[in-house]
Length: 169
Image (tube, rainbow, N blue to C red; front, top):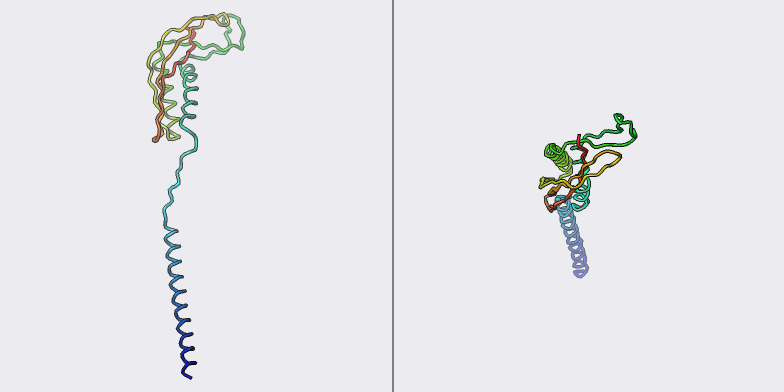
């Protein structure tokens, strides 16, 4: 009879041991789950666009914007009876600094909204050539500008030469 009693005690001990192991497993699993839930994930909020493509867009459009800020756009020229559908850019190169500062400020404000720091410097400008377009004397100037853009991780700077059309008033 003594043998049978040992078997029952042995089975009871195994059941108790398995209960303790299961209880410890549940506690460990729940603490792991809470640790995993408390891990801080850092997700970047930047766009996937490249700084070089942004710089290329700015480089292409800065000269056009500068020309439009420098010259008044007149559509048609009714004073001489010529074609009313033509566009003329009348302006004064003496106002280049004001037009440059206006263009630079506009590009800075737009770029800043997208987390980019834009800067530009007027290096030099000079007379390029003169031509008659649609019976109107048009003067072309070359303007050298140093453009730069920075997103905090990368920096691009380049000297760019633009051709500016300005019909003297």
